[in-house]
Image (cartoon, one colour):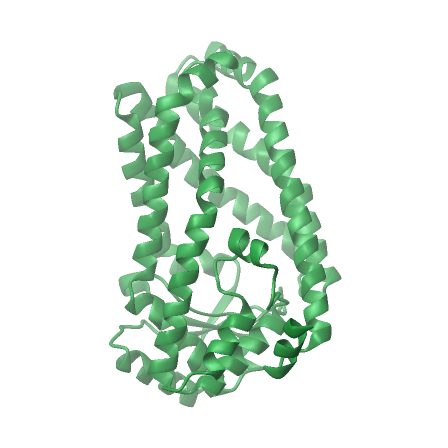
Length: 375
């Protein structure tokens, strides 16, 4: 009851809160079910599929590079197809809760684009992995370096090459808002390539405001679903929060944290992989790919509460940066309420759920802090 009083006090709609709880529960069920099913399929493939597939490719192709490439493609496409029903359930869930405008054809095209991107990255990343395994006992170090470089590269090209594959971008036409955001960037002492309108409404009803990219690729992105429903002051408060992440080097912090976790993961895999491979009668070659991925998934999942906790700290600091830069707590508070309700985020989740799964503080905590800000 106390939680509902607080929600009402800070402007949250209680019906939207109930709907957000249902949406969160359904999403968790789908994600947990998907994880369990994926692990089960992975184990079955290790027991009955990986060794025969590797043996067949080795006998048919002979060339080790061709064997690696074909195995990686078959594995990636196979698991994409197995994961497709879960992706479909998530797609239908978005429609059930009236969050999506995307039709089935558009969704299928996006799935195909995601597959092609994933295939390209898998071929590069996993080929490097198994080449380093073949030439060095310190393969886990060299692989970690390669995957870190690839992650930074993706972060750099994402706003200019990857995101436009899924959404159309236009230079923002609202000159007053564009001028205000550029002035905000100047006050934050940040270089910004430009301000862009992301035409998201063809696919989603959710609002998106972001400062994406690294270095010279950095750009402000505002979805048309945000531009239609938020005041200039609210948008500036949201983007000031995003600027806080860049000002505090949170992009590099999170990349570094992920890299550190990956280093730990690769070390543990190298340390303990032999008995696991022995159990499945596999060698340390491309047939071990499902073992490596499964072990890394378990390690990163175990570390995810720590990562989420650190992320929540950075998000709180970015809120503070917005409050100091814009000095308009009402604008930030009202924008956070709108975002929570438009995107159907649960503003007051159970503490355990927030601790385990949330990389942002709860919406209620963020709004309460903004409204209590005194400068």
